[in-house]
Image 1: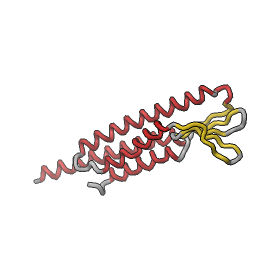
Image 2: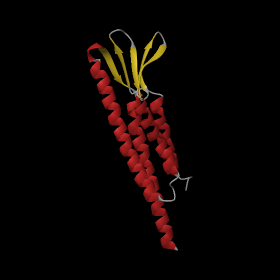
Image 3: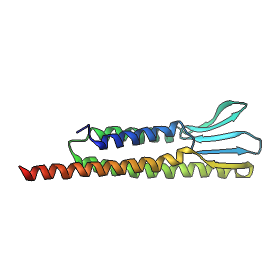
Image 4: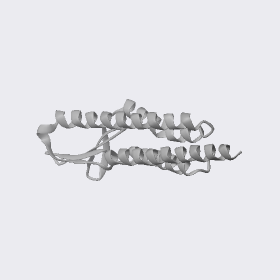
Length: 157
């Protein structure tokens, strides 16, 4: 059933994951004074209120887009709740892999220019991943409650 609570949790997870395209996952300032930010779409530098893309990471952006769309597709698997739980668990694994990929990208970028980095901060993007995993876990709880409700209704018949 689409109008159940797990639908809200899955939609919330999709919206949170969409935030990866809006918020950077690392921000830092180099010795030259340029503020740089790493998004899933690439590395951007800002100088005099002007943002310029230094490099792009199309594969990471496509993977993040796929991970963002999957919770929306899971909503429509409501007829088979066991498969829906399996897909949510696979989505959690994909989010963990995305987090590892983002960490390695940030580590590689900061490692190359570590001699010229003055300050580095973890951005909002890294904190969106655990929040999405929490929402997906809550969706699994809702799906399991539905399964128990269906089984108890079947026993009454």
